[in-house]
Image (cartoon, rainbow, N blue to C red; front, top):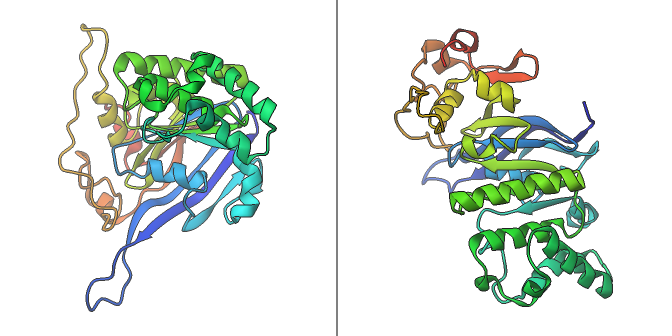
Length: 327
């Protein structure tokens, strides 16, 4: 196995709530509540789950856009968890982010040239090389050089996301965190952007953390998939292992919603009852037990261990072995 580019150890991110009248105890929204994983050089690790599960917050903590409440983050073996702004600045060129809304992430008052050039200016690249790099990046992502003198509103959603990818690539990063990069795009455009990301990974040996809520989106781009629920990882495995034999009931429910192209194949849909509980007041024991069709008393009382149930396949469920035969 390749050496780890990124290692995440028990990351937590709690947001304090306003104290209630006469209350002495501080309450928190536990957006990320103890997440650990490694990302190998050149691979794509996808984080998947419903809205509010903490996957985007995890990405922002890794990018140092948010400070972790607890835990550690190692990049190429170096602890970057508590680096201040001056200390983290030289590392910024090593990891970049592609955002969900390509229009909101682009300054509407700047030309495309200025948008892509911005990280190059921050990292003191000389003017001539900046111009050459902008032209090169536009061609790399499937746009034309003359697009550099246009504004974001003159482009389609897919083209704007290509611009966002070009900006992320500007300083030759090793790691790109893509936060729902295709969820705002039409299905036909989604596949184009996914194919572009895959081609760029092969060409530049990029490492991706790909954040999504739809397992069907990540199936063709991922090497490994981590399923998150209420701030925690509930399953982590290779793409093939997870899609072929999911162990956690939540993963089974997500997979049951993925459409199948072959009409002769029928899949029993698992409908989860109720909404995700509030991360400000998560359930005791297994946080999924309030919606799990297989929950028993132990699930309400004891937090399941996140354990390796078969080689490189981890799951947090008391009854994973018994449920493995329930597809």
